[in-house]
Amino acid sequence: GHTIVEILQHFAALLRDMDDDYNSERVAGALARLDVDMDGLEHYVFSEQALARLRGSLTESPIPLSVLGQVASSYGLLKTRLCLPARARLVDFLLEAVTVHRREGESQSEEVDRLCESILILKASVLEERGHYEQALEAYQGIVQWRQQTLGKGHP
Image 1: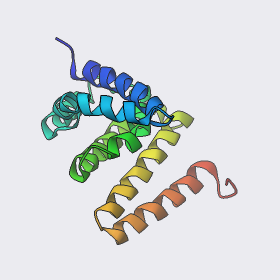
Image 2 (image 1 turned 90 degrees about the vertical axis):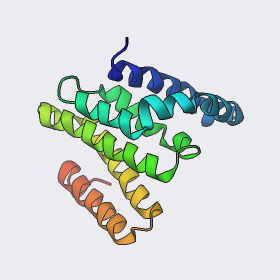
Image 3 (image 1 turned 45 degrees about the vertical axis):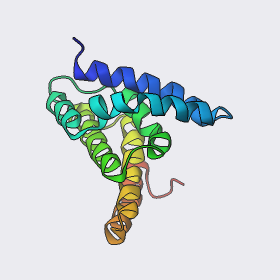
């Protein structure tokens, strides 16, 4: 059998292909493919049980940044089919997963910084969608502060 991380890698590759189509004139095809694959995605990746299994594997085998990045960059596509609670769970998991890379000495990595910022923006967006406007505003302000600390105040 495949490990949970291998399953996530497989679905991330599928998402990459669908996301490429979603961001082109082949959007209808991407949505149709996503509809077909949603049962598997929900069961193996986005369910509470699947995310709990993924969390459990984070310390022994961190999820590759490329996989986390692909899932995060496919958020626009996923948003069309995943309910808000599932998206909130996914974003929380992505934050946990990227934090593992920061703890393991990759905190100075520009790739980790960019991915962390992208996921923090998704988190603020989810808070906003849920009607938690004060928390969303605080999250957006935190992103600005984090960006200033990471990149410097003069950076655009």
